[in-house]
Structures are given as structure tokens and as C-alpha cells.
Length: 169
Image (cartoon, rainbow, N blue to C red; front, side, top):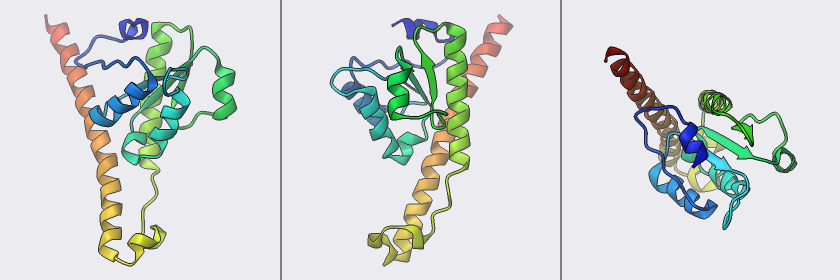
């Protein structure tokens, strides 16, 4: 609740979960523009949610802010520097939170730009026998990355429009 209150005003919806399992299910169904994940959660830990996110390219492309009051527990499993997500140590203030969100978005954008080209020879044996299937898999991966970028741009445009409207009042 406190994190939700720290978020800047804008045209976006905050979806909350009571535990890691519920959160992961919401991530799968809602495909949010940003994931804020606590490392210590009941039912499914933040670490387990993170591992599941990393298995799916369309989820892996979503900016991620990982939060914990015990950084050493995070660094035991994920050594620094954190290249795939932004980390913020509890307790934190609004400025630190906003900086972490900006950092997570920059890292997600950088990661999307460095996704290697997929060639038929690099795919699994099940698709290499069919060149069309390999090309479809490669194109789908590119579409997923582009869709994530489009969603992020839509969100940012909405926030910009709201900001301009507020300034014009």
C-alpha cells in the first residue's frame, strides 16, 4: 500500500497481489507495463516469480523493480550488477522509487535492443526440420519485444497527455 501511494500521479492502473502466486498469475493474465516485485512473499517467493518470468520472453521484456529489506538475500541468488532489473532496498522514499522505475525501464529497453537474431540453425531440433516454423518462432519473438515497447510508449504518452492537461488548467 505504501509503494502504491508513492507512485506519481498518472493515467495508469495499479494491480496488487497478496502473494507471489497471485502476483505471477496476474502478470500472466494482465501483461503489465511494469512489475514491482518484493523478494520475500508468501506462497511463491519473489525469487520463484523472478525465475518464472525469466523463462518467458514476453514477460522478461517487462521492466522489473525488485524490492527487499535484505539485499544480501538477493545477491546470494542474483549477483550484482543487476542487469535485468532494478533493485531497491527497503525502506526507500518516493525519489528512490521513481529512480528505480526509470532504471528498470532503461534496462528493459536496453535488453530488448540486445536480443540476438534467431536463425533456424539456433533453434531446437523440433523446429529445425521445418524452416517455416523456425522463421515463425523468430518473428514471434520480435513481435513480443515490439509489443512490449508499444505498450510502454502508450503508457508514457498517456502520462504525458495528463501532465499537459494538468498544466493547461
